[in-house]
Length: 196
Image (tube, rainbow, N blue to C red; front, top):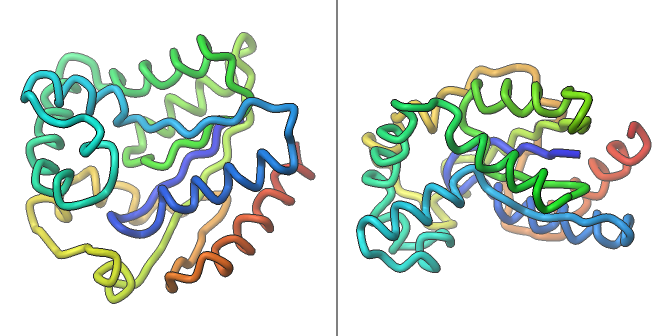
């Protein structure tokens, strides 16, 4: 199973992924469950090329935000030679690590979704694909450290899925209360497990 999570910056994608993983691990202890990002391999290469601290690029915070615009540019340049370079890195990881459930909290493009759907329906890698869209108000995102930046927030990587209407679940993450998000995650897990 592959769970793809989409949403704006600071909408709670990574937090929701961690909550989902904890619940899934408790419900399905015999399964291998991992969180992996399309951007993980990108960040490794970007850090190496630019002599940056990879551990700081992997977490949301001032360091990552300082380098975000250049990271986006780096990703777009790499995709010029192969649009699916980061998707291929992720599907290779899933296949090689023999992961039962992969949670991907950085779905940003339609082509990523299409490639994962194709990977999921391939008879050799048969996977159920679940899509989730996180939504948070501007006020809540600001309380988490978000500040509008036209170059970043207007970029296609932030807006391409804004009008996509076919997410399996839409999560209104309008508080910073983990109990609320935990209840929503539990509800989604119950539906996923029952429909598997």
